[in-house]
Amino acid sequence: MKKVIVVALALVMATVAIASVTASGQQEGKMVMGISIDNAFPSRISTVMGIISEAESMGYEVVKYNANGDAQKQNADVENLINEGVSAILVCAVDMDTIEVALMKAKAAGIPVVSYDRDLPESESIDCSVGPDSYSDGLYCGKHFAQELKDKGDVTVLELLGALNDQNGIERSRGFNDGLKSASNVTIIQAPTGAWQLDIALQAVQDAYQADPDIAGVFAPACFFVAGIETVLSDLGKLHKVGEPGHVVVAGINGEKGACDSVIAGTCDGVVVMGTTATGVTAAQFADKLIRGESVKRDYYLVPGDFYTTAEEIEANKANIWGYAELSLD
Image 1 (cartoon, rainbow, N blue to C red):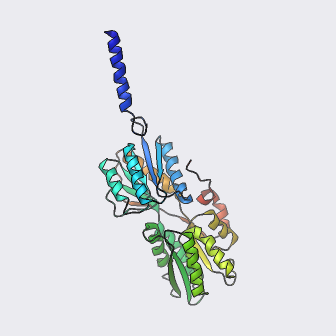
Image 2: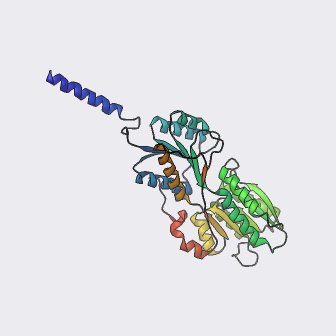
Image 3: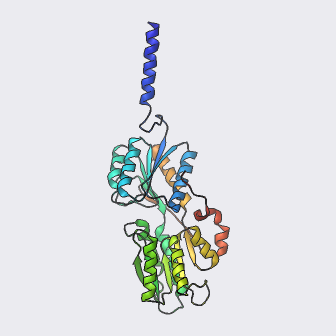
């Protein structure tokens, strides 16, 4: 009889152990943050590294999926996170409309959702959003262009556009145009870049200068366009340093190393460096609050960037510029 009791107890314990393991093999009670990444380009990696670092410092495990720019794959990624029983999901949407299908399932499962790097203003499924103040970032650049070109007579500025279905692209453009409103002498022409595509941006700059060789400035809504802009200007004999005759005003947003190096070299006027780490850390902190049942206002919490316009500013702040950091999701 005693032997039977021992066997029965062992069976119960085994059953409990099996039941306490989720589909992903994680022990019940172990808190897990799930991350859905739109695409693993450098600035996104920096933000996700901020999430992971903060989550792990608070005792969470982290599971992450990269959609590689595929909106349908991202929906599947979010469903995988739901099935794995994560405690919260942090998501940066490939497409703000497509993602809602998966996020509704997360809401139905009672899983808190925090969107990072961009808001999802039409979503009824997320609890809050954390991301860059893209309007202010664009405004920095617009005001700089207005200041630099105010005494140049009637001039034209080329504004490259980010993805038109991307909130960051839309807000950067809105801020840039508002920043230039004080410069009545400046006419803005716009050129699309598809989904932030470098080859399309490069062709747009070439076409714009062929149509108007006297363009006085080019706005890069993403800093990785700066190298292409400077290549075109160099080919045309128009790449001059800030303060030199014939200088074309160039400024951009993000904080890539190449663009920052161009500021140091004097060929690029300025770079708005996004607070990627701060965005990730803040997103993880909000997810933690939601997991613990705290109330979080449904809002878009903005993380401002820093606008650097001199070599001295870049050099002094390299430790805080993600473009100079070692980035990896491994």
